[in-house]
Structures are given as C-alpha cells and as structure tokens.
Length: 138
Image (cartoon, helix red, strand yellow):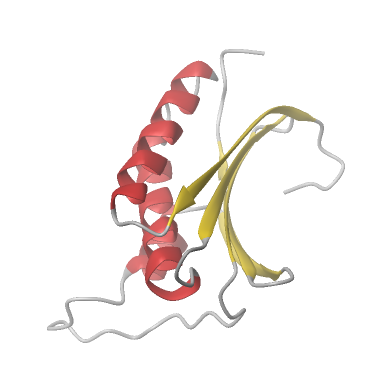
C-alpha cells in the first residue's frame, strides 16, 4: 500500500470474542464491497476476512475483549483489510501436514492477497492484507 495514497472510503467495526463474530464481519465486508462497487476478487477478500477474524478469535482476543475490522479503499486501487486484536504480536505461518485439520488460514491469505503482514500495536497486533481492485463508486 502506498502510504501517500488518498483514502476514498473506510469502515470500521468492533466484534466481541464470539464465534458468530466471524460471520458478522464477513457480512459487513460483503455489504461494504457492494457499497463501494468492488465486485472483482470479492470471494478472495471475504475468505481472507474470515481467516483473519478466526485467527484473532482463536489466538488474539482475550476474554471479555473485542477485535476490530478496518476496511479501506484507496485511490490507488488498493483495498486494505486490517484485523486488530490485543493478543501477542508474533505470527507463525504453520506448515500443516495433509492430515492437519487446522493451520491453513495464513497460507490462504498469503496465496490470495497481493500483500499481507503484521504490525505491532499496544497492546497486540494488526494483521493486514491488500488487494488490487477496481471500484465503481467514488
């Protein structure tokens, strides 16, 4: 993401530590993409939101805390997804075996997003991913 890129649109929401929050975050993302006229790559974006939100719930949100989803559409054609949590800042990309039932979320994010990473925050971390998109709404 170009740090000088102009922000066209942004949405933010907080979600409680509840497994239903993943579906609600995905629904907000779907609505937001429609509102912003982003149709290409929407399945990839929605899957990455699901994976990052699930990881936040499983590994980054202590009891009685929330995670935050930030969506931003930039003038340079980048859609940024950020999931903020208050858990430890280390992220490991696992190397699951074919029999593993878990551990593929960040591998999917790496495969689907144009770029992704982790930034520290106090407390916790921000896991983000970027997608090159075209929007039909200004």
